[in-house]
Length: 504
Image (cartoon, rainbow, N blue to C red; front, side):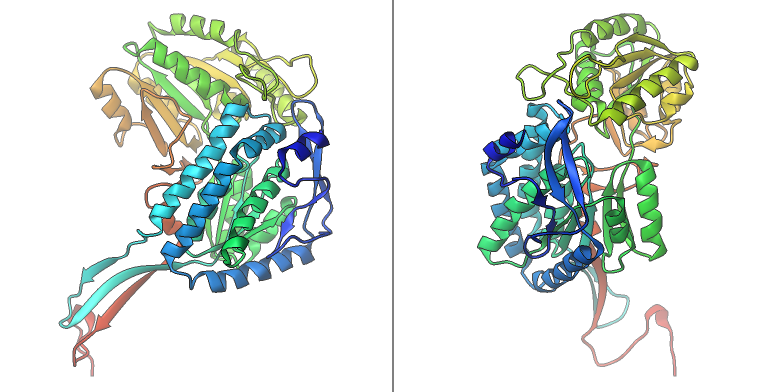
């Protein structure tokens, strides 16, 4: 598979350095991570990781870069991000192919991920001229108040394998226009993608003559722990499991730093009797089977109103049995492999538990007899309150529940620890509005007549409860990467105190 990497033109001859500190560290001494192609189970390449000394070198360089970068006007920072977006456009096909090779994500989805990076770059360019504060009227004569936003510092980004490039861009490109430098600790399952992205963006930074604000520090959990505990990193953005996020969040909180957590999802779709069945089928299939069930927004639970459940379940069984599973680079493949053998074992264990708890596997849920980590997507008829369905199994398992109506569906949808994405399918305006109300879905994302996956960059992305509460991408999420400052200016000749206090 080494020849496949060479043909991409991304300069990934193995082993490659996974440490960038103003330049590539030629021989980082933290050991080697082997990247595996999940479609074959074979070695794809290798990345040299950071030792403690290498990490310190990265942090010193990132802090120095921030010192210079925060002095650059925000619109100029935005122009650099514009150039990065153009560079990603030029490398879209090669980078998407690498993502597919390293994660097993089908090529159209990988291309969509790179396009999302490009779109985020465009979004950030516009944002660079909209980092607005506000003016406020003072209660004191001859005084003026205002709020302004300043660069925060060095931002740490911990990314997950399922979106090995886009998650970095959600954070890094917004942080860049906000005046921050970024230290990226990528997933151990997708280090080559991180190296390739870091190469692309730093070629642009170097050519433009700007400080080296994008650093890379590949490694294992120890490296993530160093970032979380480092007081020089005022914000750590972490994407991954709830267990990982809890560990990161607790470590950051102990030093009174900030954390932005994008963690587990256990997403549900509610289908009422008046729903459009064709819309439901398309949304459920993509939501449950896309990325082999390895999205944080994957549809994992389906609550169907009694009267529609039997017909919809039969149609889903037929559709599941026709899902093309195979090489994710092949046109026509809709589902590639799971990321590694452990993920397959976890899926099988979850299904065994579901059976023991009274669920019925209607179709799928088997290992595919071929090289790599392929499975068939599982459709499971489940009794309400199934304990295993309260957990997030990062695999293509969809639990189908029958409910009496909207109230019961919402109650069970919300009765899980996670709160990322949710959706309802109905033609009833009152039901839709009830779902979107304060007494409806408790998730950070709530959709009507579309599925749980496929969030757009224009809206802030994130969830509640064990999902972590973080928000990335659109809306006012840029504020996470800056520090707020309230200023009062006295342009008079006296010094009145607030609240009318007289002193002295």
